[in-house]
Amino acid sequence: MGGLQAAWSIMSMVTLTPFFAFLFSIVFMASIGKSFGVRRLYVNLLVKIFEFGRQNIESVRKQQFANITQSDPEDEDAPSGDNPSPDTADTGDGTGSAKTNGTLPNGGSHRYMNGRDTSSHIANGGNTVISRAESLILSPEMIDDTRSKSAEPQEEGAGGGMRDQGEEGDEETKSDGSEGGGGEHEAAGFKLSNCLDYVKSGMEAIIEDQVTSRFLAEELKNWNLLTRTNRQYEFISWRLTVIWMIGFLIRYFILMPMRVLICFIGVVYCVIGFAFVGMIPTYRLRRAMNDIVFKHTFRMITRSISGVVRFHHPEYKPKNCGFCVANHTTPIDIAILSTDCTYSLIGQRHGGFLGVLQRALARASPHIWFERAEAKDRILVAKRLKEHVTDPKNPPILIFPEGTCINNTSVMQFKKGSFEVGGVIYPVAIKYDPRFGDAFWNSSRYSMMQYLFLMMTSWAIVCDVWYLPPMERQEGESAIDFANRVKRVIADQGGLVDLVWDGQLKRSKPKKEWKEKQQEKFSKLLKGE
Image (cartoon, one colour):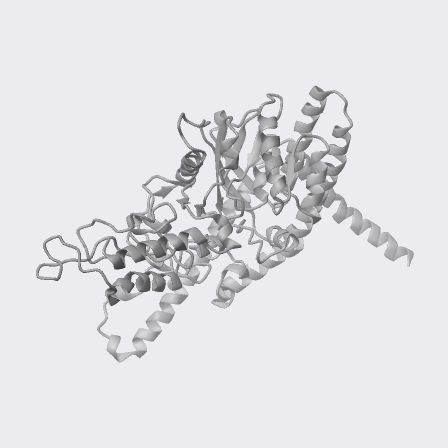
């Protein structure tokens, strides 16, 4: 028995001591914002593995296709060019998607480089089933002018979908010799053709709409060896099966335990550190210590998900008593941005894990937590925002005006509240690389703990952050126009689709006013107005 205990102690020293030494070296380097460069090498290796997997899947698909064509006598004379191209492999979500070779599935040109869309906006983001002309997309702000004046009068407007109500023309389609020719309107009254626009847009809505797809996982062009994003590709060949099994063991039995420990250390450091900072009586010293603990905490939390963050244009970093406005994909957005700058946070009050962090943060610096369902709280929030931005000593406030998480393919409607207060707006664009892990939090499907488990078992979280030039509200500009201008700048920089729809459509039905405007417009058409 004594010999077994001695052997166990020796094994513990040989294995556990190096492990904990490595773990605490990671924590220390994370706290001071430094790195050994292992994560970047790790990410580069993953890219090569994903590329090998893509080539393997494509070769198997080609072989399967060749076997089918050989067995079909009608296809014996088919040209070899009918074989599926490597650039049209199945996506990780099982949806065919063009590879980034200069073309998009709907025929548009692909000009997305280094995380930025260098071209003008493509209607609906380009990667869609329904190809709609941008001028024909119905939205709450374009209800009175939805028919295109193009050279093809037979083309009808396409509604946005389940929540993008149908669109009807302001003019009757005319041709030589038809009724009402010579520029005169047809006689008022109901005609079956008046319903065709609604039928067409309704069918398009069933196939695809602009809103629903923004709350689903972003499509992948290559499989990333995660079963949550594939169609049983791990069994398509023995090579991929071996790679997938090795990756499974690494993610669940090496990376995940280490990440959980790092995250636990970060949370404990947060609770204890901010408790001590809150007891410092001198404001200047408390502010300096808060900056240190704040950045250390979120750097450790970011390191716990193998976060690789690239910051661009640091000269535009947010300054005191301003608003930092960013697109919203996940609660991790806060940790990502807080590794480089100290913020005052504003948001909905949470329970559980997020509630622990919120209460710890509030002990050391001014943060604003509110209950979304209480209307009285909103008035109080606006008042506290004004008080905060008038004090030059306060850190900038980090705000996500969308009010909900979007899947990082688009930017949806910004709430005007923070743009009415005044002060300087510092726009920030965040773009995640979904190949290594989908950072989007679908709160209607996953709880916070389930989401954290998915993050801990992903390969990594890789993203780019762009600080943009500060913006101020112009004279005579409404808060809504200002919010849309800021949203457009963020969408342009991040290569995201700029949408006018409210992100709360994820939880609620379209506004009654939108339906009434459509009904009013249809009634005018029947009256011949």
